[in-house]
Amino acid sequence: MDIKNTYWFLFHDDELLVKDVEGISTILSDSDIKLLRLNPINAQNIGTLHEQECLIANLEDETLPEGFSWKKVRPLYGNMEEECFWFACRALHIMNWMKTSKFCGCCGTLMNASQQELAMQCPSCGHITYPRISPAIIVAVTRGDQILLARSNRFPPNRYSVIAGFVEPGESLEDCVQRELKEEVGVEVHSINYFGNQPWPFPDSLMIAFTAKCSTEKITIDNQEIVEAGWFSAHNLPDIPDKLSVARRLIDWFVEKQSIPHT
Image (cartoon, rainbow, N blue to C red; front, side):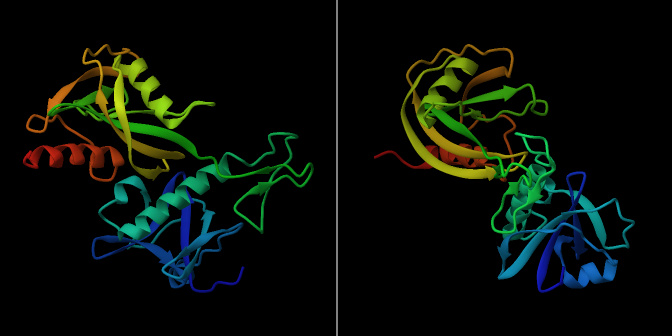
């Protein structure tokens, strides 16, 4: 492949190869590829960033000179230019999909990357598969001047967040909000309103955020996904997610709403 003006998103075991410049992580460019004497194979075009072509590829665990390193993508937030960070998330999502879509789900033949679109196509039966995107709702439920927060068994100790869950077949987003809340904390809600969305490539989610008001206040946790839950005011919040996530945006929205004088 001819090397042009290109950003290279090179991965090894879910880690991204980055260049460290004065404490900031940057995406590799053509000159870096030449400097490191890398020869990425089976590179896939995933779009443009800053009007430059972007390619992804897998590499072996190369021995790297000072100033280059393998890093997990999520911790790069705040240590990489934000637009580059979110494109790195896109690259990670696509790379994980390509790794898990090597073989045709219909006939088992090794798949090829399409040259016309972002897809994998079977050379035997023609079956085409596209990047997997798993929609999930996430919802801030309020009760007056309090917000419902819960602690999942997957969270770090003492970490709480808003309720989230994957959309099931045949379900509307609003139906999913109602079901997840009922299943996980036993709460019913009304006034479900769209808030925003966020791609979340860990590994392949699209988070669709809502706000809602509680109809029932009693909390009954499922003791499976949720181990603790409660109503919290803006002045006594527990440990909450960092600013990377739409979960934090929902909680910040609640806090800001409490500081606005009522008329």
